[in-house]
Length: 81
Image (tube, rainbow, N blue to C red):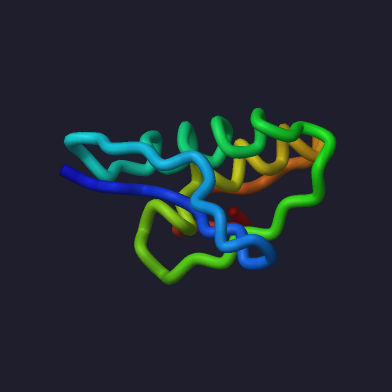
């Protein structure tokens, strides 16, 4: 089992806790999406370590879509992303 949650530094509040059986790239993107969905107009800053899901192509593409980026992102491990 894997617990993924956010800590709101200003209040000490735990935000969007999720328990999953896996810790995949998609699981992390879904967690970020659920967190942002709680306040879609908010300003979000996520501080994470270097686990692969925290720097995955899926996450880069999710963020690019979320901010309206339409340019080429490249290919993971080859160029870009």
